[in-house]
Each structure stands twice: as structure tokens, then as C-alpha cells.
Image 1: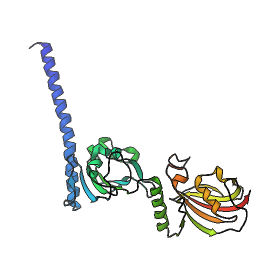
Image 2 (image 1 turned 180 degrees about the vertical axis):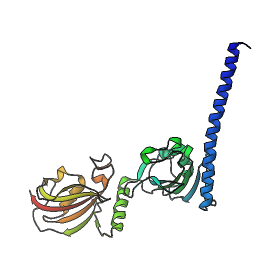
Image 3 (image 1 turned 135 degrees about the horizontal axis):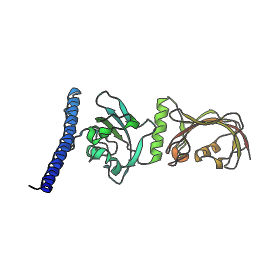
Length: 293
């Protein structure tokens, strides 16, 4: 055997060993993941509800939903939580007033299609639980930005919502807030704005879009974060210069004090503004100090 042939054979054998080694390492990750998931299923008595999806994940349909089937072309609002099966640490989750929204086709591709397999054939309002092996999730590198360690297996809950439009979701947010805080508000049917009147004001100049208004106000997000305020009687504006939701002030009188819950579609909409995220409901305390026409 000549030198060239020996070198070629050695290179071939080396490549075979390396390929086999990589393949075994990949398979061992799958095996380790599956053993850990099976142990978790047994420890939590989930054997009767968790089903394998064929890729290494296991899922449970908690609620199949109602109405129309979820379809790739549809936009879907959903909430989710990802936590560790090891110690229950929550890595990632939507907030009460900040669910996610995307096309179902994009959503179903998450984590190598594991979300799609669990949600396949379900309807709006569906809820599922998925145990996602590490090799189909964040892998050996983890996700440092979310403090996800290497080879983390995820216990994931996904709730799809029945709402199709942003204004419907806004209304859900507002009602959730009102219920949680035991508040009673009146809904303006024409705009979807909810308001609470603490002072009706006095008869005076009617308010139009062009009226010059002196107002005291404080603006908050539904999570309580204050993003703007002017309460010293120096802020002057017209309704033409403010967000659309302030237009409801035309229904009130000078001196009125009101609290407004304004849907995002009448606030900063899908674009958001400065520190205000897209599709955010706003909560305002407003006092109409004076009106000039």
C-alpha cells in the first residue's frame, strides 16, 4: 500500500470515527432528555395525560378550544409560560396585560415545530402543556438573556385566546383590570372607552376638538407604571393635539374629574410611543381645569 493510499484510508477512518462520535453524542442528548422527561412525568403522575409527539416532546391538551380551527394564515393572540422541569424556575412568560400575537403559522414553528404538533387540529381558546426536550429548545448553549442554562428541558403552558381583533383584546384587558381592582366603570359604546366620574364638573363652555383646555392629568399603564404626568395647572392643549381617546372629554364639563381606560387602538396603537409599547391600554386620571373657546 503506497503512502497516498494509506493517508486516504486514514483520513476516511478518522472521518468515520468523528461522524460516529458526533452522532452518538447527539443521540445521547436525546436519550438523556427522554429519561429526564419520563422521570418528570412519573413523579408528577402525568402518564395518563401526556402524549408523545414523535419528535421527543410530550404534550397534553388541556382545552381543545371552541369555534374555528387554528389555521396558518390566522393571527392568534396567546399567553405562555416556560419553566424548568428541574426546579420550576420560570424562564419566560407573558404578562397579564401583554400577551403575544403572531400568525399561527409562525407560532406553530416554535421550537422545531413542537408547539404546532401540540396545537394541531385545535381551535381558538385552546390550552396545551408541552414538555420540550433541550435539544429541541435552547440546546446546549441555553439562553443567557433569559437565564436559561445549558440543556434545559422546558415545561411550557400555552393559552390561545378567542379574540381576533386588537380592540377585543383591549376590552379584555380593561375588564380584567377592573375586576381585579374591584372598580365599577361605565363603557362608552361608541368608543370602547371605560370611565369613572369622581366629579361631574359644572355647566360651562362646551368642549370641542378646537377648545383650549387646561388639564391636570396622570397617565399610567395597567400594570401601574406611570409614564407621564402634569398636575400643576400649566398643561394646555386641544383635543386635536392629543390621542384619539381623549376625545371623550367632549362629553364632560369644565371642572370634571374622570378616570379613563383607553383602548390601545385609541391611544398609540400598533406603533407605540417612546416608553409605551405597541398595543398598550392606557389609564388616565384627568381634571378639566378650564375650557376656552
